[in-house]
Length: 259
Image (cartoon, rainbow, N blue to C red; front, side, top):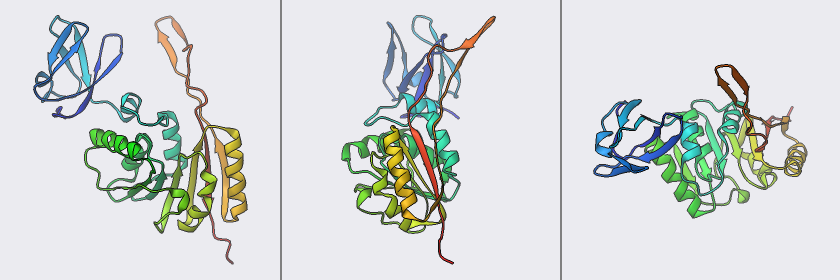
């Protein structure tokens, strides 16, 4: 695929460092005393090698979703890609699913959900803050383009969920236990409730609420730790830094207790 005007790309130097850039006709990219015209990149194929004005070479790539998330502008702290992957799998997000999420934050999880549910599915995102909505929608539009399967409701999900027959409820909120009752009403039988929380006290509270609701089963809490490795000729070892604890993921399934 060829690069388009208005598209986000990453410049990769010889050491593998990434430099994000949004392509715009007529503009010039300047870096460390060198420059290159955006017009010299627009229309080129993904993965092309370009030469700056003084001879430095960069590979230009269309960022993957994890790469884009880590470099995109933020209005709120994003959920790390390592946790988004777990959320998609443990939340069993599938093509055609109807997913309610809150809040939208900077749009990182929303983009992953949109890609997972596909054009036949829908993501309904609740967010109370206007600035978060604007930032998230800008980020989503820049990476995914126009998305017809996203509905944004600027309202407090703690006050209720307007949808019915929901397949999944995914929450990135400080007090998800306030939504447990609403989720129980709108989730279909067998539907999944999932929340992302930073502390064990929050996890304890939401698990207690799920148990007290009386119609959730298979309540589980997990976390994931990601460690990269340094592999260079005879030097093979774990990297000195790793992404350890970022948050806990609690999952539960709704069931019918009617005979």
